[in-house]
Length: 635
Ligand code: WTA
Image (cartoon, rainbow, N blue to C red; front, side):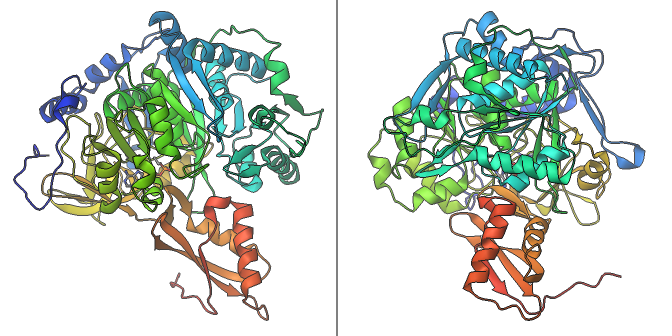
């Protein structure tokens, strides 16, 4: 990599503002280069220093990182801080409250779907609620290693539950609350969850979604498909009542089964606010999070305690240049990896104050994001290109009503950001004062792997720039040969960093086949990538059967199979089509069975079918009749 200068006029670079550089953790590019070199040449020294910030009940016994990345030499494994004992929840809460005296600091400003509903939660309060929830889970029979499915909207209880699991060594499996009952059922069964935590429902904008009913349907489906694994369901019963002031008479009823359902509001008051953390091995599992797989069946990406702690905390600190007086806001949903790493674990590990947002960008008006930034004086703001493109459509006006002068750093994640959206974000939202950190990463990587550092890296719009500390990328051609200098090909990594996934839950073979088989010795991201003459990395998009819709990866095979589940469809093929807001959208070809007619009603039915099988995010934009589909020959 070369030190970026201004010698190449055609790639205009945006240099960090001086005001930011003064107190930054990584104040300039040379500092980045030095630290990067250390992280690659002396990983033990580098990560031990990071680890020294945290509490270890027992220190590690060997090298910080041990691994095999070469399938020809045996099983793939990664171990971080082997031999050490610790607890994630202790490190992100007790350590802040007790050792750092941050008990009174606000951990989250929860901002509801409606601007009238908000509450501030301090670190002490958070610790108390998490301990209560941990005691409830224990009372319900949850033990270390058990899997807990969580199907909750963006309410504080979601954070309480995930941290409660982390506290007692249970493995959380959060399912985004926009997924269908079928998707929830599939995920519950795959990891044999013993408990499901859900809520009565949620308002998304004006629309009420009865989550409990969807959860019940999922549990019914689990019973039909296998001997049910979920024994009890913990339900935040009164979320809707709590947020709905005034008339609640036409509130939809929450279905209730006294034999299985436990009411959150009742039991939380009956247990203690103290709960000893379970001291876990560094490599004990922390959570499973499902991501689309090219075969159609989602993969349960498994992350473990110590490595994920080190990596999410360090990336958060450096990429958002975290400072004690920051108010940070990541607009993702905790149901995705961005929320896991950069709403819950990374920020809390740093004692940060964050906004936890239940709403959507356009409710009750299209200036909602800007209103929230003004309300909390947000300094660091992290969102997705799809949200930026959506808000761009409404022009500058909604934004000009609010004071956004508190903003210091802007971030994006989830998909390549097109230059038009980048410039709007940089110029209109950030008023050319705020660096845009375009962070490339994946559910599998646990945290940012290619990213600018805001005070150090000159930016090129659309490039995720350079590797984070400990990350060793390269580009391969189809034959697995490494490409130097300016090049385009497969983005791979030569070695692990602490936060990389450890396996696909219950399926090591799939883990190795998906990520390590194509090019032995490398982790294969599935993304295409270009390196320019200055060494900047540019993600060019997926090079497998995955489509990135609004920053969410969808498997073409999964959508195809939900289409062919319909009685009228003989075959289906799904491809990507560019979309002005979503980036990409689904374009589906269907071949109908003999004597079935292609018409509007059928198209609507098929769209509904995909929505019900997978979830609203997978709704096809286009369905076209294709009396015959081209095939590749398979011998
Ligand atoms: C894409 C999301 C370009 C990429 C954190 C990756 C990006 C997939 C970027 C992972 C970015 C994510 N620029 N593409 N800054 N960030 N992607 O697992 O294709 O939901 O492989 O994790 O999103 O999606 P996932």
